Image (cartoon, rainbow, N blue to C red; front, side):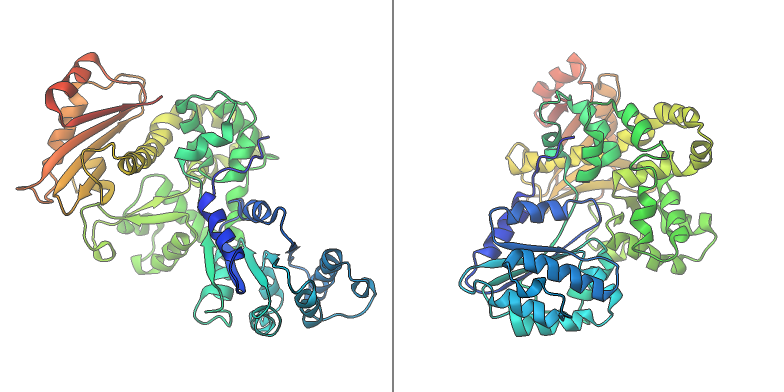
Length: 467
């Protein structure tokens, strides 16, 4: 298994800046489980004087005992090795007084569990911060994987710790552009990487599991459809810690995964009022599992009636498309039936949509490198009642627009796809009389010779094929 530390350069740079301050530092790191929070912290504290403590859901007294043992190891204090009843204050005072002149780091991982076992712990830690840590040569990192609890305990205005932090990092998934770094030395073609990415998304732990030399279908069979597999029940574990009524959230995600993206359609299929869905949808948005999107030309997204809901996590979408509806077959050890469905539908019903997101990432990369005919200020999907366009990039100042189509098929892209895209563009009302248009086509399998020739003739068309 490849356990190399990949990417996270901005996050590491931020933590280094905080460590190099001449004053105290208080950083909150949070994000869904498996996203790489602890790996980031362990990478950062290498070769630095740091006390790392992993909180648990045990009683507060057990957490104090465990913290005392970690403190004894860190400081070498013989007093802490005695069987006394130490308090949080006792232990943090020891930490404050240990090597006062040296910069040191305190990490409390899964911090939210301390607030779960003691509802007043945020207030306790506020006092500890102000009494023992704030004026010391200390960097504090509070880390947690339950997003809603971490926000309520450390970030929200109502939290006693609000305003104490000097910075925060909400960990996101690795994007596709750095995905290949996990497979260094594996000789994977870009097509293979896209198909792996369509299952694992950018969650480092999932990528590590799949990074064992298997084909994507073999990996799915071994780690997702196997009842003892690492990822078989992962969405259940992910959601049951964050929300109470997991069934309602599962119903919503399953409905969206099957292509029902309008609020009214979701409500209709579930037999509930639209107003009853909004809090569930907002929770899923807060957890980075879904997002509400509007056509890229819409100026005010919050009031747009064109809003559609998309699942943001590739693995969650894959699981709800191909695993959740067929769990009864898997439980009866009929995984062959499920694998057959996956093989027949994986590309057209899943990978082709993920490919659109990959192409959008490539567009932004090209934009940064100056490889587009103009500088994008925004880019995304566009649709109305009759037309959908995979990518539309805009520059509001120069009134320039680029239209993109993404084709993940075995056939080379020909004239017809390009001219269909031109006709689709006529449906976009944005600056219709004054705009300048360009076109870009992405293809898994390349382009026909006559389409390549057309690029030279027109000057407004760009072709991008998988490497």
